[in-house]
Image (cartoon, rainbow over all chains, first blue to last red; front, side, top):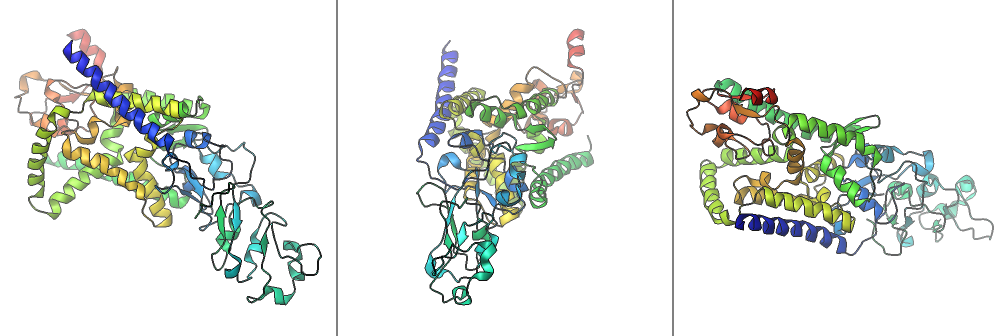
Length: 208
Length: 280
């Protein structure tokens, strides 16, 4: 009888420890991060993700990485779009290898592509190399403001950009249209001075 | 058993473990999804970690249809083969034994001193002896927590997951992961408790519980009259069992150490457990 009670108490204590640990992780304040394309929204992503790393293994551009301890505890081991290494080509060629590899459906191949992040950069450091303009898959998301008041230049109109504007010393820098940018990170991956950063769509600036 | 077969078992275990770790890295470089969490994909059939599948289904508040056939298949395999995974495929146990061996190799006499200190520490933690009850309680708490807080905590802490994620990132991006500090937990437990990590591993316990009703491929004393009760099998057992007195499928990791260490060869794998029952 005594033994049974002792067993019950130790069972309860261990169960409490497991429950408390899970609760601690859940209470951690959330830090937003750039989610992979086709990720489940909100808390569903952290709940469904198996943290197996299959998406990172199959990503052809190596754009995905796994969140480490710098994330909130709930999201440790979850994949994120680390645009510094390579951008996501889903908006360009419809790649869905990560979602197809996901065993638990945290990345769902049937999900429509949504905006995962926003790219921005400090204008002072930009060298006007125009690689971002050439690489951006969304027409018009990166453009040069036209000093003569015409339409903003897009990828197709790149040749019309006057040479002085292309110069490293030009005062006119490319603009990323925050309302059009989908956050694929291709610009950040090709950026020559490596100044373009990708931020989660919410206003909290935490990405790279 | 001869000394030669003894060596080949250890070598086989080591090479399987190394192959497993190298396989994760190679798969990452080649773009294949392979890790101990999801170790086989054949079309729609996904053989995933049973505990991971359970936890994710509970946390997601949905029955994940894609994981169900694989879960049933792996449950059937575990029912048949027991905790084979723990003894032969688990990178965590491989890393543990490799560390112990490396320690003994680098510092002569360290292994003996370590064993002595460990015995002292084990005496110190004896009142806190972790056993099946604690492990089961922890597992239940984890699963309940996964359901209530929608948070699969074990998928983060699991040494297998930590090891495979670290290998994936090391192979692809050549950088270490801070997450690897979670591996201190099994290392510390190995220091303080006799059976180390094995007494509390939720994945191993899940495997053990799935295997519990079945006794196939479990070592058992076949020729009782030859057994001298020398205790060599109990000394060799990785799970801290006493094979000559009987083994529970819940704990046996099918490492076959007892079979190779028995000087008289009295222990055999049980192949037809039901026939034996009829005889006795």
